[in-house]
Image 1: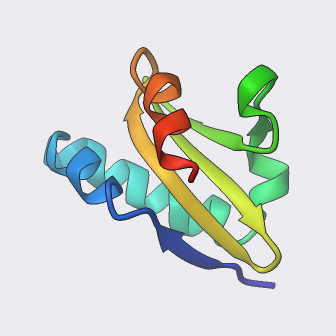
Image 2: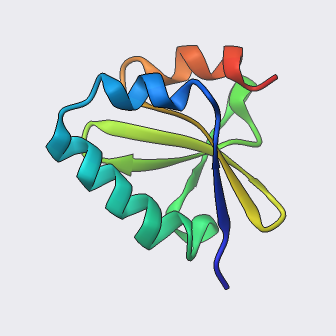
Image 3: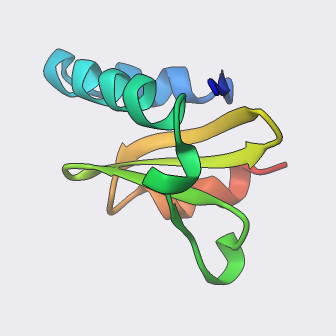
Length: 91
């Protein structure tokens, strides 16, 4: 089963801040892991971000929410920045 990947509008800004090598690596991980088995590859977040999951790709994190057969990606950033911005994008 393949999941449909949707991106929050602000993810474009996140990707523009990355170098080409990182963009390609993240794109491949999303296509190979999240589009196929998001529950297996993702790790549930805790606390105020309960209900979201993260995919670890080196020092970067892809934070997403599984909504039926769709994956909504809310952010792609360095691990030190991602969790602060997700709270503003979840609405």
